[in-house]
Image (cartoon, rainbow, N blue to C red; front, side):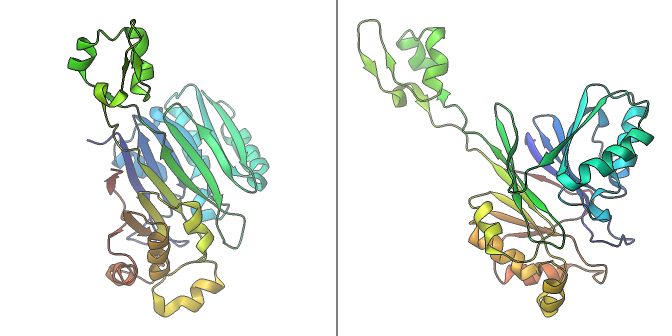
Length: 304
């Protein structure tokens, strides 16, 4: 099983339907859970998908439309009932910090953990970083301030050839440098090229979340080279005028973004309530990009 997975909790648009919940996803990266958007029903889907509340550490809110954030107060309250400890950091547009803080101050007064709000800078940028992962926010083009999120692994270390390390009596103190690509210099001054001691690293992987947004090539530039892209596909191409007026994209436009970004896979979602079958949206996206998957509640995708 992959140590970098995408879990779909909700992929509908503003109005919940019998088929879809509002927007929410969970990234499971090396056992740490990070939520993207928190529409109503998100915590129920976490239970159904066996995603432990105790491992949830960060929540990224793209914008302050209700279908992307109104599940947040209930989730935060539930975390206290499960006696979660530590902290939960919530990244969100700056104009939502005061609103959400007042709500949580009231409903989470006896919280067992610390809630930290971090406003996203207007122009985005790196908003979270670990030794192995970078999370970047970037502007989207909707009716209110809105951000997408890119999760990118840092370059990984090269693999050490055990037999060659033994042959050259590689000391423990030199292993990290060699795995990071440096040559090894023996005590007598001989330079051992790194490729004699190592094999190439595993590829670094990346995922980008783009919802909600009108079609804009700046989105493709922001996520260029990302392996897997989720992009809203609220309408099919016959409703392109509606999409533009409401700050949304068609499925074909989502396909164009994936193609321009040179992605490997496109996941579409944020479906209008008018669609009881999303095959029309998948077909629409495939006119521009071949490898398209339709999001659905309960779906897990390995980022590989």
